[in-house]
Structure formats: C-alpha cells, structure tokens
Image (tube, rainbow, N blue to C red; front, side):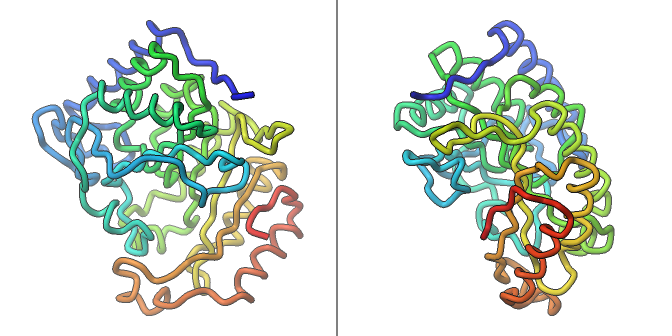
Length: 300
C-alpha cells in the first residue's frame, strides 16, 4: 500500500509558495543572502534564476535502503547549489546550472510522473536554492493528486526561516552534515558559518519531523535521516558531527556514515583531501558512533 503524505490545504500551500517567491526579488532564501533579483534573471552563488533548473529525474536505487524499498526513490536532481563544495561528487551539476529552468507547471508534471512511476517518495536533490519554485509546483501537484512522501535531500546549509515554511510539506529531511569546524567549512565551501547554520537547521528539521519512522515494508515514511561523508584525516570533523547528533539531536537519529569519498571536482588541488579514505578511517568513525550510543547506523 502506498504511503499517503499529508499536505497543508491548497490555499495555505499556495500562500507559502507566494511568500517565498516574493523573496526571490531580493533573494534571502538561503544563508548566503545574496540579495540579487532572481525574478529578472540575476543570479547569486547558486547560479539559478527565476525557474528551477532540473538536471534529471526518475527512479533511483542508490539511496539509503529505507528510501529505495523495492520500487526506488523518485529523485529530481536540481542543478546549481548554494554551497559548491570543492569535493562535490556531483560537481558538474552543482557548479553549473545544467538543464533548462522549468516553470511551475512543468515541475508539477515531473512530480506527478514520479508518482506514476511507482516510486516510494519524491526525493528533491539539492533543493535549497529552489525552495520557492518547489512549493509553487507542489501546490499544483497536490491539486493533481500527489500523495507520496516528500524528501528534502540537502547539504545542510539552510535558512531556518525558509525551513519553517516547509513544515507539514516535507515528510523526510535528509541533510548531509559535512563538517562542524570553521576552517574546513571556509576552505572547502567558502561558508565559515556552516557549522552554526547546520546545527540550527538540524534542530529545526528534528522539531518538525522527529526521528525516522520506517513501516513494516522497511520504507521510510517520515522523520530525519542524516548523512555524513567521512573524509580523509580530520577534514570532515567526524567526531564533532557524531557528538552533536548524539547530544544535540538524539541517539535515535538515523545516521548514514558514508565511505564513498573520492577526490572529485577540485579536491585534487587540496593535498589533505586528494585521496580516498582508508577502511580504517571509516571503521574508526563507525566505532566512535557506536561508542556514543548511536544505534541506527547505516553504511554497515
């Protein structure tokens, strides 16, 4: 039986979309606060204008097991990004605006096509910079019968004011907590405030949806799922990330400690992250998470 998402009524959803869209004229959607007028084609750090640039969409089977189930996670990949990490594994998509910006009607049709494909959820990948456009499309898609859970698959660099507009809209938050040190945040994504921003964002996400709820089929329905990419040496401040999750969010947080780091994008130009991680580095991260009482660990 397909899970049914519970959205705000159409009027409320449309109102939120309009409120966020109005902010695009002096954009403060994310913590960059670029203040450009995206409605007239100006672009800030993310590189996106008025319409949401879609790179690709369709069923995806490479996500976490609770998202994939048997029918796949219905991913919609947006190009552009507000972080632009030097090591991004989707570097070509995130550092350029690949694909045409699509109007709300077309984006809503994409969302509904994901549901018709039988996917367990609508997985919005790199949605931060196009949150207003997503809400505009969702208001149309819900009117057209969209009912599967919505996944907000992001890099964690989120404005709490924007996240509050997503309460009751997003069923599953899936942030990637990259690091909790000012130096790596500044060096690798030019966002020295990332640690304080991601802490506040996760607290808000956890408040809205709570721990991850998985049904009897093993498919996620609602809640928080955190990703953390273990990087070489101390670059990803992994112990600090685990400490924050254990003490600040909850030991029942579903955590995927990812071991697939490889030096993508411009990472080879940074010697300390210009190699893959070792099995020992990843195992040490898993052992530390267990020692801190984190008992919902993926990546095993």
